[in-house]
Image (cartoon, rainbow, N blue to C red):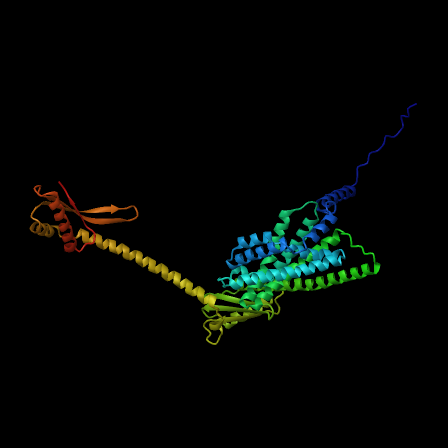
Length: 475
């Protein structure tokens, strides 16, 4: 029997908190699927590939030598395209990645091989570049060479993210050649080594040391990125039969990792502070150092001594305004200890005459040369125009009556003489040519007529002092 008093089931709606929790779970799952690289990681193949690329023998050695020659030529003629082409074929990344992986998986044999081959790679590259720049007839410094003489914070960031991209690409199943080539270009390991060879060839130890410093920074952070990714992806540690050796190996690998990481952190912080100093002081000089009638011709920044030297020309700036600038620059962020020094051209006791470098003077001379060259070209064009006008004036001022009487006396066989100015063009220039039309006695033979025509033309040229004239016979 049906119970009419039974209560139907009640369907409750999920609460707001449940909705939010569900949304967060969905986002979490989505991000995990988007960013997770564990599933497609082939650890064994990656380790095998890295070990295979470490060695510098045979083909790899010759490819390195040829690519160093190509890169040196590109740097020598300041051709970015040639330098990029050289980086595409250079096998420089193998030993550096091997160092990071060897430390990460406690593989001392791989670490030793990587360090030995890294040393071979550096010596071979520098020696090749040194020999090229030693025999190269082009010795002047180019922007491409100068850009590789000292590291910046951007170089460190490129090395970090380039190294991460490289090792992540290597760990993926299959080979991503385009990624590896792109990293080879971005991290720019080869140009600094070529610049070291250039510095040694010209005897500039500062260039050689700065370029080697840049290469070392790139190498350290690429190896460090490899180490971090290998640890995150839990690459298997090398197993040793002797447990004591395994522990010693693990300790040695950890010690090497710490020795690499700690200086790298300090280096990164120092380069970051230097870049902030250069950026902030540049921004202040370009936007705040402004006085009517005065102009900034150049400024120098010295991070180590915290000096900013600004050189002005034009109207003298009062000391009160200079004092205000000196105080204002210290109020900027991270610029409390910056010393601003203003040098004015009107101050005979200042060092501006000595401090204005040759490139500034060369720039002024070049500007003057360009202006004078333009003035000369304008004057030449005006002279040509006046010469054409003079020719027209002479042609239009011919005393025809006198010329016709003299012509009749000298050439009795002339029956008629007419004169007009003909405007002639060859489609590149237009000129006005005085033209005389002559009718000769019909009894004259053609030979005599041609002879008389030539004499008449020569006589008219001398008589009228004209270089260009036309004499034509009419029937």
